[in-house]
Length: 114
Image (cartoon, rainbow, N blue to C red; front, side, top):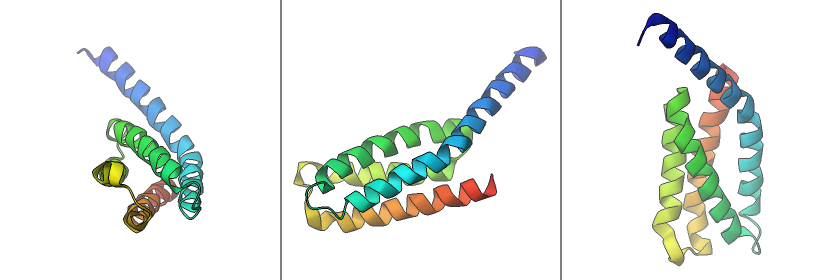
């Protein structure tokens, strides 16, 4: 790869990273909404499915934009929900909530540092 191509690639990655950082606040808000929904007896199962999907997306992009710790926390949340599978019960929500809080802490720390 020549220097011009490398510069273009780096500029493109910087733009993607900037867009990711600007989207963090909205992502945090969305995760907090889902955290609140875990308290709702009529929505907790649906909220877990949505949490899993959002964590999967977040995990997928984080490594590419230089936020490995966020990605690792998202992966742990996704894996926990997957491990519960069809046996997901209300009493498993504490584990999900704990992992979600860790993810939110990491996201907020990175947003503050950006």
